[in-house]
Length: 69
Image (cartoon, rainbow, N blue to C red; front, side, top):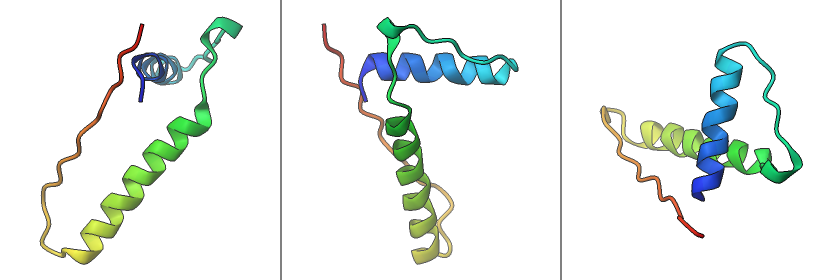
């Protein structure tokens, strides 16, 4: 995930949380499919691990952010 994708993700979530429709200009194109796939894969992995390890209480994930110019 790039820093730009993370920032736009935060913006979209803030707007939706406040009951507003996010407005994104052509300069701020965001790949919403990427965000959906990212969180879907994360949730699927958590569900799989919880199924395999019945007594699992804590899971750690690392978010890697690519910072480019």
